[in-house]
Image (cartoon, rainbow, N blue to C red; front, side, top):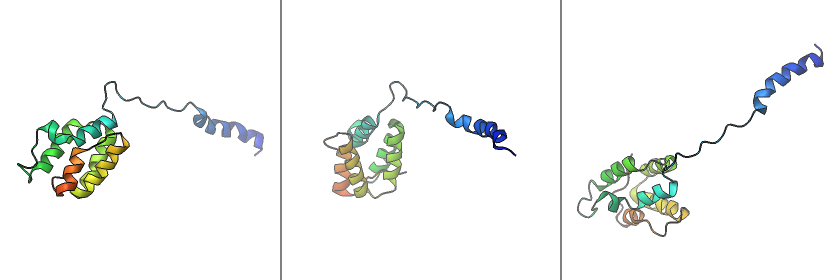
Length: 123
């Protein structure tokens, strides 16, 4: 077969690759940003009305439930999932790093998790 005869077939196969790239989806209007979600995670005890001192046994479950209900940013949901498979103290360190990266000066949940090593987020 001659190469001139193959050229139209080759062009037809490459045409889909030459089309416009799909547009990136913009976050929904009013959607939760990653920094907002991390701030909520850091401040979960105050926002959820939890007292870790009064109920140290179930505070981790309560924190997890509240975060699952109120944190909707996909990247923050992924972070919560990654945190949930770590021990409480390690969760505190990871959360503190994320808080710093988004510009938060302090993270109360990270402080609590590192301080007493209990009450971590669960899956």
